Image (cartoon, rainbow, N blue to C red; front, side):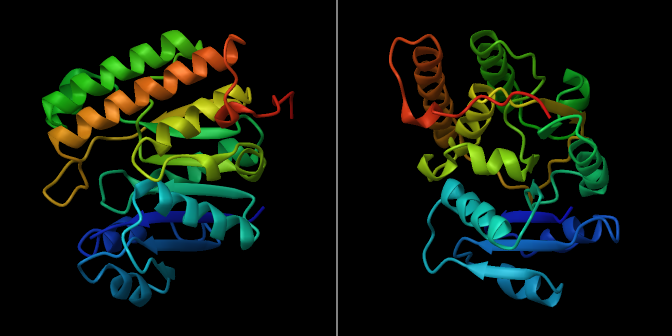
Length: 249
């Protein structure tokens, strides 16, 4: 099974090296970096690391960046696609564990959860307002989707090819709410979601959206959740969640 790591990158020249070097040797077949018109040397740094690099001519947005990542991975024959933010916030040494759960057929999607205890999260540098917003949104999303995930908003995820071919992610937002749409589409398709704990590691170089963008993201996530509830209850269909339900291995 071909495994490809994709990294949606923006101004990650200082952190992409450590993120890549932490992936255990021999774990993946290819690493694809999509540089969303960074203002620093992200693309040059990625090339020096021997990675496959694609550069957007203009900044298209976080969601659009991921679309390019998944499109390229599928075109290059990936059976498993691991998405890691290249800002060194997530411990990429855990990549083999994500892959093994998918390769061995236990799950269709794997998520890296940063939320184990409040003390650990805050000690790891996550801003208090982000922690509170994460907890609030995750609780609401769990209630209305019937899931029991510890975190819905992680930047460390892995998908099987079957998932990426089934859900209409090309129709998703080009902005940050793309991630929420992806997971709700996976739930609508009844795919099996698993989680692994990952340490919290915020630093000055970690990618982060500001307070204003965080509010927009939260409201957008709730709007998507509303569409999900209306769709799954049969009140109002949405093409965003027209996914053929998954029914076994």
